[in-house]
Length: 272
Image: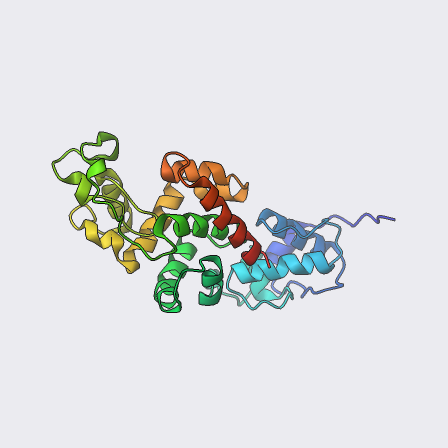
């Protein structure tokens, strides 16, 4: 028999200085509010019934992992704060990380060497946090696209000469030599003078004058994150529209099967 839970005055949580600690088998309106907030953040706790069961615990752990918190399934001050509930004495913004490790990255990209994974991870992690790519759905879509575009983070400059982009006014290539100068670079293969200019302006780096910087590991991941957010791709990842993500990155559906294979693998790994 389903028992209706009393409605929760959300303002009581927002103003509370010591929200109740919740854990497996907790019950009550605070649990229902926790479940609602988890659902809004993209983590399915099951029914919002005010009962802290195994499914809610799994959602809490996934949320904690995505925010770089201690993954223990216990909803204390830091987890409440990360969910948007004011907690006196807690920092207004809990420092977060993507939760990604070198081991997980190599599971998603099997051809990636340990040394290259270790080199890339700090910059990849920072870029994902900067672009709010911190849920399994967003991370899986982002990493799948990067894996395909860069040959699993091995190639940060397009192997072809770039001559095929010469004279492409739709890419902003209006000057002789622009095709080669602004060929694909970085893990998302940024292409074209116009994109280099826009990315550089957004990041405070003159990529138009120094296009090779887009292929450096410290800049390349920030460029990829900028491209991702500038095309609204987090929202598409949230609803699972991987095909449209591919179209906005590629301009078509080149390599869609391989991209989708990376995506399925990443989702499976990051969701457990």
